[in-house]
Image (cartoon, rainbow, N blue to C red; front, side):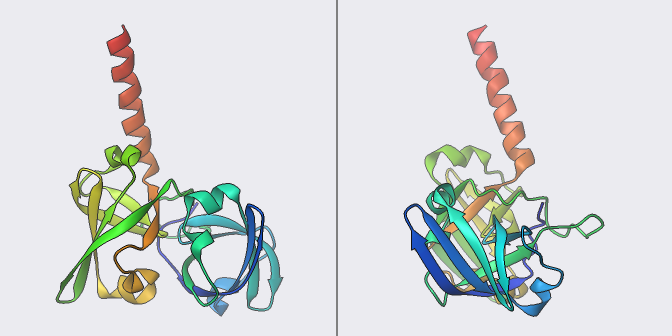
Length: 204
């Protein structure tokens, strides 16, 4: 489980591509390496990956076909940075909202509204996922727990404070970029349950 509170960013320093498979290596900051072991879970832009090798600050992770298809991790090149969060431990403060690290889709950044001391980003989701968007609901964007500000069909916006812009990669995003999206699991469960109940009533 993750909290959506990004602990920092890490640079991609090496990539090994194979058919429908990729190994990438991050230079993890010291604070993110403390107690890190093989098999540990680390979220990269909100996608849960498993540590496969550790060599000092260089930590390796494997990305399978489904990960490459659903997330923006396959688009990374050496020198890019990703948002990093270690898996939550029992007793940790949940500052964001509970997240699984399972990316459901990517959304395109459509528009940026600048204002004094904050920034509003507008994203658009693929058609099947707009039904999970609710104003003031939670959403994971590249691993960051955010509150939805406004919804316009498949589009939604989030408002970012300077701290979020400084600590994460969202400050560098430009229109046309694609970000990883995790829908709040509770929202998804409620929506899908209501849909099943209504469908059953119509059949009955």
